[in-house]
Each structure stands twice: as structure tokens, then as C-alpha cells.
Length: 343
View 1 (spheres, rainbow, N blue to C red):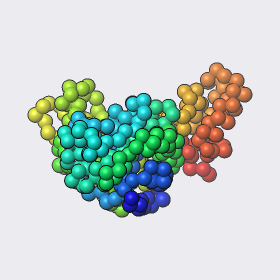
View 2: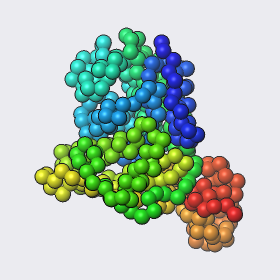
View 3: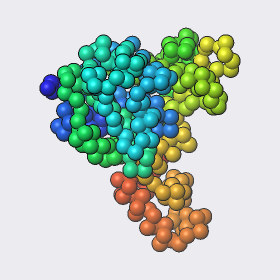
View 4: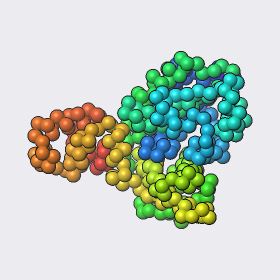
């Protein structure tokens, strides 16, 4: 079986985590080609990708559209809530592949005959990403392959989550802007500020991550309209290399005849990012409340009085928070979670 070459990650922690997961699966399971992605866990839209093979932009966008909009087999959204978040299909043994849009449009034309899919769900049930492994021959992914993958999933999901929030840089763009998309996620119109943001994200990105995120957003909105779902805006937090965060907000179509999709592009502020940090470090509600007080610059006695707990309890909570977040002081905690520079 071919040994894959993982694409470079340019030192980015999230991509390093995904690459390490693919390396471990190559060792314990074996595959010809592998794909890993990180999700915004609140909406399960992929925001960062690694692959052991060249991703053709059009096919990648079609895959995103399939995942968000079309009915298909072993969707990541379904695996994320399954008792076991891992499943496999074989073109040679599973009749359902003959009617699967993903298999007919993407996998079989690319010579892939075996597929293993996994949702990267942590021990608390939060899905931080997903994996797809492929084989080109008739060697099926076995039950032991699925068990080995399932055993790796919680630990690798937790590592991915921590890597997503390990670095914090100022968000972009500096001022909100807007894109106008069609139903396929193609940009119809954008002001200069939005164009500059897309160009910055795309610089050095040979996977066209912006295109995949926009395709996913558009497909999600179309799916919501087709399914008659609540017209709630879809928000996705996108992390760029080095910990720069951007929030994209896709507003649902106002009528069936509307084909243009407005997407607000804004820097991810603390209020949008903090829930992700709390989940990534598995902080309790009380610990999250205490962190908020620390980020306000309050001392131990004031925090104890505000939260109606003893000073010793505050100190015990801080020890637990430091251990979970990998810091040793309040200043480091403020930098890790609040983005406040350490003097």
C-alpha cells in the first residue's frame, strides 16, 4: 500500500495536529490517501484542512457542498452524534455507494474504492473536526481498523481543540465588511476591504480554504431554506495561521426568489471566541466565570466576594484552570485566553 506524504503545515498548530492524526492512522490503520479538517464545533463547518494528496479546488468545494446540503451516506454531522463516530464504506461491497452523490461524483472518478470517515469528537461530545481515509484497491477497512480509529478519536480531538486556541492574534479585518455570494458560494461582489482580507488568507494557501468555507456557508443556507428551517444567521469562526480569527455571518435568504447571499466578515471578538476556549480546555461553568473575573484584572479577594466563594476556593479553581490551560500565572492566562500581551 502506498505510503502518503503529508502536505506541509508551515508550523501552524492546528495543521500540525491534523497531520499527526493522519500519521498515527497511517501507522495503525493504513491508507493510500487521507484528508483532515478542523471544524467550528458550533456549526460543524470546516475551516482548516490538510491532505496527503493535492486537493483540486472545484472538487473540494463540491465536497463541502455535498456535506452541508445533500443527502448522503456517513455524513460527518451524523457521525458526530453517533455512538461510534467512525464508519466505512466499500464500492465493491456496499450497494448504497451506487446512489451516493459523493461516491459517484467525487470518489469513484478519483479512483477511490474504500472510504473510512471519522468525526473527531472529544470525551465531552464536542466535534472539533473530521477525517476521511481512502484506499484504491479492494482491501476493505476492517472492523479492527474502525476500532483502532475510534480509540484514537477522543485524544486527537482534544489535541486539535487545544491547538485551535493555543495562539491568539488580533482578528481581521480591522473593520466589518461584507461579501455577496451565489448559491454555490462564488463571490458575486465584494468591497476592497473584503478582497484584501480574502487575499491575505489565501496567500500561501494552496487549498483555497476561503473558497471551501464560503461554499460550505452557502450550502448550509440553501439547505436551511429547502428544509424550512429557522432563518437564524449561520456564524462560523475561521482561524487563520498564527491564531488570527475571523467570524463570517451568513444571513438566510429573505425570499425564495432571492439568489444572492450576504455574508458579513468581521474580526472575532472575545465574546465570540471565549466559548470556544472554554470548550477546548474543558473548563467548568464556575471556572469560566472565574476566568472572566481574572481577565477583568480583579484580585483574588474581589473575585471571591463577587462569586460568593472563599479565597481558598478561588485559589483551588485557579490551580485547576492553570493545569487545564497549560499556564503558570494569571499574566500567562490573560495572554492565553484574552490576548493581552505579557509585559
